[in-house]
Image (cartoon, rainbow, N blue to C red):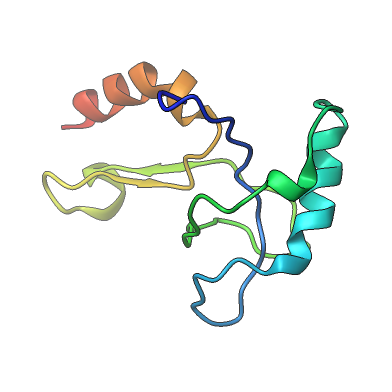
Length: 105
C-alpha cells in the first residue's frame, strides 16, 4: 500500500451476530492460504488491519451469487439505483457499471 505495508485479504467469516473482532484462531488458516503464493510469509507478523461486515447475496454453503443491479424499471422508484453484491468485479467493471447506471437514470 502507500505506507509500504503488504495487505492480504479480504477473508470471509460468516457471523450470527454483529461482531467486529477478529478471531485469533483465523490466523493459522489465513496464513496457510497466503503461504501458498507468498511462501516467505512470517505468520507471526500478521495483524488485522480492520474488520467489517459486507453484505452478501448468498449465504453459507450456497454457491456464490453474481451482483445485482436494480433500476427504476425494476422497483418503480424514480432516481433510485441499487447495486447489490458487487465484490471482485467492482473495480474492473466499474466503468461498465457506471454506464449502465447512467443509462438507467
